Image 1 (cartoon, rainbow, N blue to C red):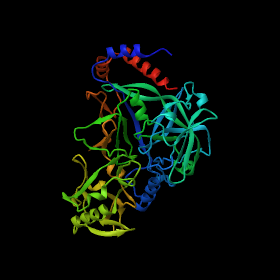
Image 2 (cartoon, rainbow, N blue to C red):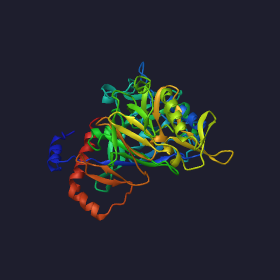
Image 3 (cartoon, rainbow, N blue to C red):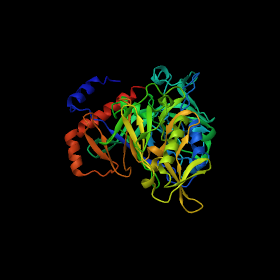
Image 4 (cartoon, rainbow, N blue to C red):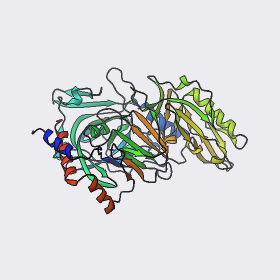
Length: 492
C-alpha cells in the first residue's frame, strides 16, 4: 500500500487552523415510558438484574460487562438505537450500554440466539460472507497483542482469528470473533449540515449466546458499548480523527421517552462538570454531600468513598436511583420531616410513600447532590419521587424513588438522569450535566474552537450549506474522508 504521508501533508495544509470534527447523531428510543404505573418492587426487580450484570473489577481474566435486561418486557427499560454495518449496509438494533466497551451484533451463524423480539423490532444477523468490505481480525491485530486488548479477548491458533468471550454476572454470556467492516453514520460537518459518512471499525460478531441474552422478551441485535476502553466506537472514531472523544445524551422523562444520543459534545451554558474518579471501570463520580431544602445532611463523606465495590456511578441502564444506607436513611428522614404535616406519610410495600393532595412541586423540597469540583445536581421532587397513581382513598400516592443500596455502590439511574443533558468528556475525564427539555434540539460542538451546530432538528437550509462551504470545501472533505478510510484499512 502506498504511504499516506504525502496526502496527509496536503490535507493539513488546506485545513483551517481549528480542528474540525464530525458530530455523529443516533436516534434514541426507550422500550417503555419512564412515567408509568409499575410498582417499585417491579422496578427494583428489573434493576437487580441490571446490577448483577454491571461491569466488575476482573479477577483471573474475566470482565463482567454491563448489560441491562429483565424477563418482563415492560420492565426492560433499555435504551436502544440503530447502526448500519457492512457493504451493502444492514441495519441492526443495539442496546445502549455505558458499562461496556465493545459493539457486537449477532452473527448469521449464531447458535442458540433469539429468533424474534417482544420489543417489536425485526432481528437481523450479520453475515461476513455477504459484506464485500468485511475482514476477519487476525491474531496479529493490536486488539489481540497490545494494550487495548481486553481480558475477554484471546487468539484462536486454529483459525488465526481474534475472538472474545464475555460472561455476565447473571449467568448469561456471548462468544464470537472480531470483524473489521464499514460503520455508517450521519456526520455533521458544519453548521447544521449532515453528510452520510462511514469509517472502518472493529466490532464483535456473536456466534453463541446464553442465559438472558437468548430470551425473546428483551432481544435486540447486539450491544453498543459506550465505555472508556480503546475498543469502544467512541474511542475508535476518535483515534481516526473523525469525532472528539466525548459523547452526550439527553433522556426524555415524559410520554414514550426517547431522547438524543450524540457522539460529540452538547453545548449548554448551564452545564457543570465534575471529574471522573480515575482508574475505574464505570463512570464513577465523587459524591461529597447531599442537601435537602438547602440543609446539608449529616452523612460521613467516607460513605461515598470509591473503592473496589463502593462509590457513586452514573448508569443510564438503571431505572431508579440507589443510595448507600448511611446516606439513604438521613435522606428519607429529612424529606419526611420537611413535608409534614402537609402530606400524610405512609409505608407502601416497604417503601416510604406519601398521600399528597396538592402539587408535589409545592410541597416537597428541592434536593442537591454535591460532587467534587463544586458541581451540584439539583433535583426537583419528580426526580426523586415516583408517582404510583391514586391510593385507596383516592389521594395520589408518591413514593421515594431512591432505594437503599444492597451493597456499597450508589447508582444514579434514569430517575435523576432524565430531562438533563449529560456529557461524558473522556478527553478531559469529566462528566457534565444541565437541566434541559430533551424534546428540544441541542447545540453540539464540531470543532476544537467551539464552533457549533444545532442537532435534533435535521433540516438543512441553503444558507447553512453556504456556511459549510466556507468552512471546508467539499473536495477537501472528500479527500480527508478517503484518507481516513485508507488509514482505517491499514489496521488489517
